[in-house]
Image 1 (cartoon, protein in one colour):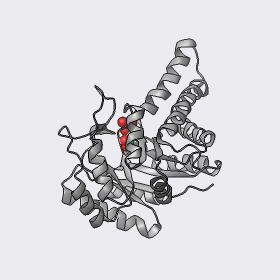
Image 2: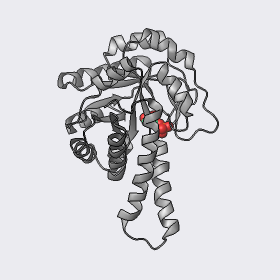
Image 3: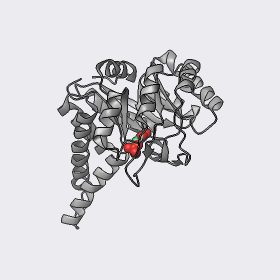
Image 4: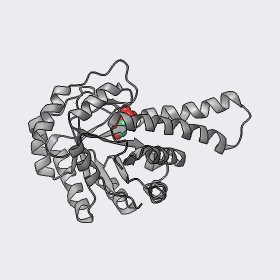
Length: 283
Ligand code: 13P
């Protein structure tokens, strides 16, 4: 089916008490892996690309890959810009045809974040494209940017004001997760998440989920998370598959051979995470 926008998917998830997995794709094989997993699990799915990914190829290239995958599939698929780092990049993705856009103004002050998030929401909404923003700072290394070391968590009352003033459609919250590989077990402020859920009506998004134990992710979903982002673990899975082929057959020269192995690892990983977030059978 044609690509869908994220808004109804996330509202359905919010109502149904589950979340939709959002998986970062970085090449054609990862797109194929995610779509194959979604078809097998009968799950709605979001594919997303970061600024460094679209710098490597372009929003047009990734959009074309995901659009074709969606059109050949029977489950709903969203194409999302992850961590849009500027108004200009958000507009580039919008013009390419992305059906969901994140503007991440969380590195600036609260007022700067409000300003850029509202500007993107105002520009995208006439074209019926929903917008995700972030309040608070998710820690770790996020794409090419270092997250905040101080890692300030999202304040529930500030979140209410932020949503009201920007008109965004979903909100990424900082409750203790970090992008990249965790050094120890992540400790999440689940009570804060419940507090935010109580006062903020729009769907909430969890970033930095690779390495968070599955039971903790499920608990976040129970407490109101509707979109769960996975990136680092997909890289690890893909690379694991490729490395195994090189270890077993060092003379291999056909990229299709080792890329297919990476693709299969990513597919298995994504299917398992769809069970964790509860989206299986929701397509
Ligand atoms: P991880 O790399 O920790 O999975 O984070 C993904 C993410 O939040 C992308 O925005």
